[in-house]
Length: 357
Image 1: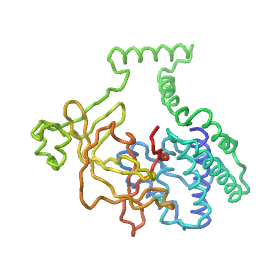
Image 2: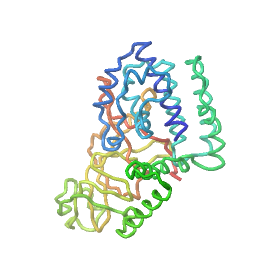
Image 3: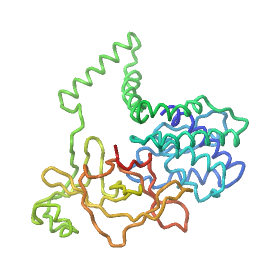
Image 4: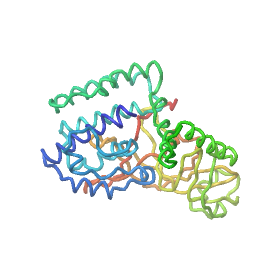
């Protein structure tokens, strides 16, 4: 997390944006900030929207971009869609960002193949070499060097995403907030430990220490055959006259699902994903069933580093349970700013692993 999201990514995004705005004059800072402000981040990224970028921040000599780690992650995901229409396809600076995205997708993946490590090593070597060619007056950070050890570390220890410190930082945030609130620095370690144990005691007493398996939001009660496409999906249930509940959202083990969110349903033998969009959430017998519209995969757009999809013309509705999905994490789906593009783009945080193991 620190190497990429709090080191390399902010620095390189900053340098590339400066080049695009003030040297190549491809667009201006106002256009970038307007797009950052109005971009449709959707349900998956809405709470991690990047902050606006100031001119002073872009022109100073630091490696900081004024974003938190989660905001930098979002910026990495959506930046190709934000400004891809303004950047020529043969831009070497754009290639640097795409290389950063490609190896980040492998590093952040919860599951990888051993064969990916050779590719990862090549991506990192090409990336570091291109950085030196594009910015000869900038020294490589020590974090750039640490990247070169990632392939061997993954081979020895497994996916690095399982060992990153994001969860530690989230836990540590509790202590940082308490330290500011109590205004007491006499034996601060005891104070923080005591307040933490009180919070833990409260959670266990209220039985909120662990996320519940299924939390259902506001819902309406109806019969299955009255639900649109109920006849089509009745084969998944015992009886089309059964009472079901249509929920506006559910939360399963901490992950929230809402209508409009996109998911990965499956991956075929060629590594091509099947994307779906949640249309309705049906609850029956305390189990969630997702009624989803199917996306039709067009291509993987290298320039925008995203999958190009369109809604299936047949409007076919499929039914999935959470444990039947290839990946339970919702993925980002949105549009780009190219006026000639009428497709939906799906950008992933990590690579796809066919066997999901």
